[in-house]
Image (cartoon, rainbow, N blue to C red):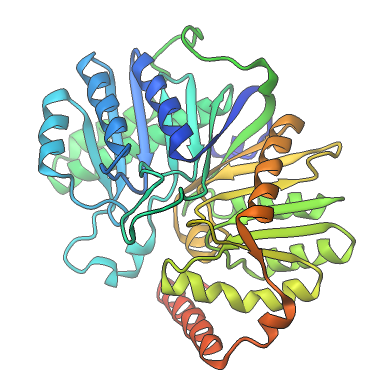
Length: 411
């Protein structure tokens, strides 16, 4: 139920996964053990490189009789390649597109509301959540082959949050099915499909075949963002954790343009003595996201916030660690950027974890990235950046605000 989305529950086992090189093998292993059902949602499904291995695992699961459902975003994922379309059809892999663009594409503002979350649920027992698309670490759809892997994270989880993930993926699947039936004027089937959205778990939840790591028992929850009942839960989770921070805040976020409340929460934390460090995108990827971020640097650095830009490859992570060594360690791994597209428009999913070991592992990796794979932003250099750069920043920020205006949003 939506009201349980922010409830932190006991008894989870959470493993941090870095990049597709760790995520894909764990995901494929779970699919290979599936006995009843695989539900996968992703913004990008790219068949290049190791992405094809995930596609093969889906086919093999479907051929064993496992109900295999894949939902991809209509902007993030292009047309299904003909070869894979035939193979999926023959095996029984069910492929659905969330919000296809149609003839006018993104000219219709309502179509800016995308499926950006990355979730997979296997047999109602095991869930994966994070920022990693079905996209090889060394391949970028816009820039081609990468010399270094992009930095991104996901988690593999067992425990009560799997029920939340199962319900969320089920509701979206049956909603898409209902819309398909309505468009075909099959109204009785559409009503029947909506009733099926309340289906129970496919198994009796015995835990046979679920990998265990007893060190990683954690308090955790799945926090969702949508445009109905969960409009601001992810941002509120961040603000609450930042407001409670006593010692340290580390945030790594690919597309960082927080709204006023979130910016003030970071500024106030830094002013009360909390060490605040941000790891942000340091390589040019998209004009708007890259340049619109920079105008917020000044106020943050004036308050004492450290900003590091990741340069080893593309940063795609959406993670944070707060007070890892304190009494209430807090960490999150998910799909939500701290920008208006994620916080106001997209469907997103983050896992929140309150566990010292998990927070320590994630913190260590982020500190390594800041020390060895990034450059620190110098306040003097920032203040003296050239005029042409400032113009690009203001133009990008203006375009973003205008786009939000067309959707009826303010930020």
